[in-house]
Amino acid sequence: MGFHNNFWCNIEMDLESGQFVERDSILPTPESLCKMTDSDFMYEALKDDLLLQLHTAPQVDPSSLDIERLNALAEILGEEGLSQDSEEAWQESARWIRYAYGFAATKQIIDKWWIGLIQNRLLTAMIQAL
Image 1 (cartoon, rainbow, N blue to C red):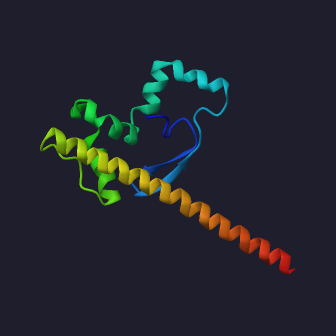
Image 2: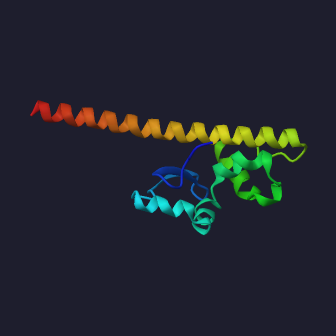
C-alpha cells in the first residue's frame, strides 16, 4: 500500500467544508521518523485516516470503521456510500470511493500546480515587459 498521507505533507478532505486542505508533515525531521515505532503515536496518527480505512475495509469488520465519515466522504465525491448488501458490494463500494478520493486529490494537486505555473509565467512576462 505504501504511505499515502499523514506523515508527509499532504492534502485531505475536510468533511465539514467539502474542500481539500493542506496538511504539514507531522514527521518533519529524520529523527522524528523514530516515532513510527511508537504504537500509541501510530494509532493516533492513523485512527482517523479515511483512505487507510478504505484500503482496509475489505479485510476488517465494518464496525471497526467510521462508516458515517466514509459515507460523508463518498457524498462529497459524488459516489454512493458503502454498501452492506453483500461482501462483494461492500468491497466494490469501498474500492470506488477510494478511487474517487485518489482521483479528486490528484486533480486538486494538478490544478494547483497549473494555476501556480500560469501565475509564474504571467509574473515573468510582466517583469520582462518592464
